[in-house]
Image: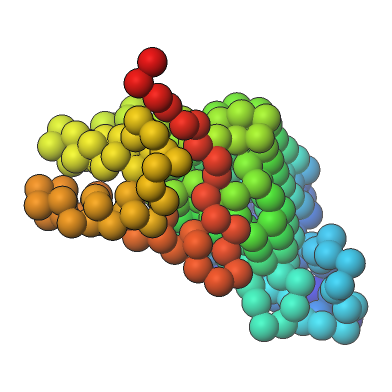
Amino acid sequence: MSVCVVLMVKSKARMWWLLLFGAVGDDHPGCTVIGSNNTIGYHAVIGVKCQDMKYKPEDECYLEVGHNNDIREHSSIHRSSKSTDRTVIGNANFIMGSCHITHDCKIGNNNILANNTLLAGHVEVEDYVHTAGVTVVHQFSHLGSFSFLGGGSVVSQDVPKYMMAAGERAELRGLNLVGLTRCGFSVAEIRSMRAAYRKIFMCVDANAVSLEERLAEVEQHEELVHVPAMRAMLQSIRNSFAENRRGICKFRHWNAS
């Protein structure tokens, strides 16, 4: 069976470099499509079959990589586990050395995955997400846009948009203030999101009212409700509790003392 790999490269020399120093594709049914202007580092493995025990060798499996990605040495990106799905890497992502992106993951645009970031199956990473080194993400988890994961974190549930999580069993640690500032969010937007975060996650007695009641209170706040970024944050939290989602990472309860 022949290997199906589509490379959109600018020159034959560029293609030759990719094939010499990185393993691209294998002889299983399906296809790997790699866009233009991607860098694939030494000993990276792109588009091989998944490590899912449910995978059937006769099934077609797919990987799609966009444009302008920097995929560094010893990284591995696997194809999907079934013909009805895709592993997808968007555009302009920086995937540092020894990262692992396994079957059926969906990676958006402009993300930075630091060395030894490990994503289990079906993880979804939106846009402008930044993981520090040696970060592990549980299967089916979602990382919202502009979120940040601290080094050595083990993330077993969703991290909503704009938030920071860290820890051996990762907890929410507030907003990703540095990332939001660098990405051009205004002082007013950040102030509104901080106010909403405090009302939701840092109330004096978090057991007095449910998370749903706290979300509803923020949604009805006459000033905060008019801030699009704040509304997007609330929607990201709500989406994490939809059917087949894992809920959000635990968060610390604060009190007045």
